[in-house]
Amino acid sequence: MLAQIFAFLDLDTPDLLIILVIILLLFGGRKLPELSRSIGQSMRELRKGISGGLDEDKPQKKDDKDTSA
Image 1 (spheres, rainbow, N blue to C red):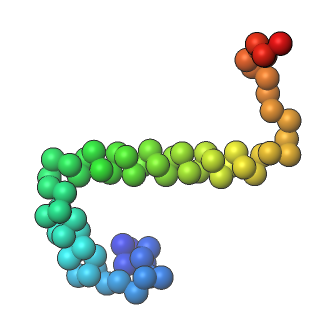
Image 2 (image 1 turned 90 degrees about the horizontal axis):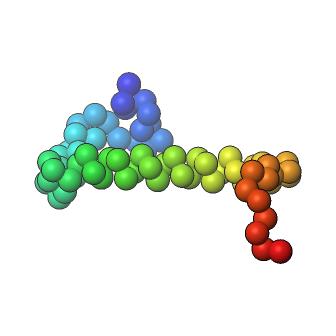
């Protein structure tokens, strides 16, 4: 299944395991949860930005009062 996800990179399972071991050696076991959490947050922000960019034609909700006047 994992090989099907990365099929466009033409990576097999042993190649992915080698990459994961190298990442583990570079960042260490303690940094991996922090690294994966930050990647997840970045992906959420990217998706939010992309979906927000698609909704630019729709009028924005004005929940906050305009205090610039």
